Length: 76
Image (cartoon, rainbow, N blue to C red; front, side, top):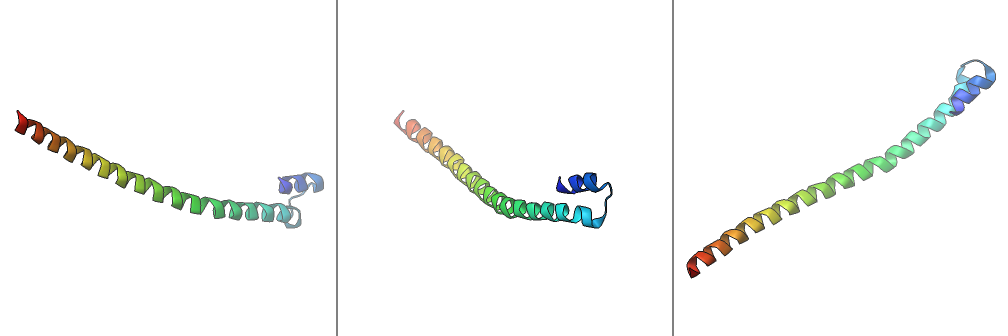
């Protein structure tokens, strides 16, 4: 925004006019990436842990249902 404002004030798009605005945008981009990259890594880690836990719970439920069914058949 500052780069466009500078162009509007001076009426030309020279490097001296747009450089401060571009440098601010690059710094903001770097700061955003510094926050976003660890967040994506943590998100993927926790999603993977949830998938593993869900698979373990599904396996347990299947094994428990099979065990309960065998026990019920034995009593009948």
